Image (cartoon, rainbow, N blue to C red; front, side, top):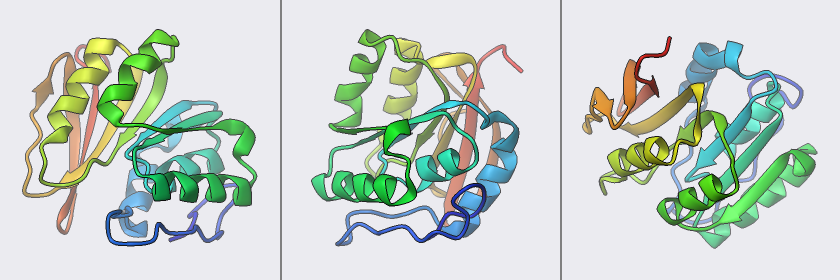
Length: 186
């Protein structure tokens, strides 16, 4: 696993020990970032179920201003911290060990709003729709922001979830990536 483009291009990321984390493949990551590239400069990003920090770190390498990483796994959080330090992004990163659904209301309380939200919940436990609803209910997505949801290709996330509209969807083998924005925005 490596950073594909930008300031840290080619740098190798540490992986989380064990089998509880499923990092986004370089092929999927490259495709996703090609799609969202024009939104990255000076963006504020939320990386939910962060794992190694792969997606958030790629965003920082390509020009994001700040990334908030959230994961409840202690080994994942340790790995994200190590990767942020190794790449020189400690000052642009906030790393939170917490359950995603429990922490999202705290982001609202803090007044945080995000331009891009990455979410890659564990497959087959039905968190995708719950997290999308929370994002919209708490209004933590900027009016022109996007949610990039990675999920198993066998799981179909809804076309509309709360006030979010799926405007694009791409399949990469057994992985699906769904792109959401607020309904009524372009």
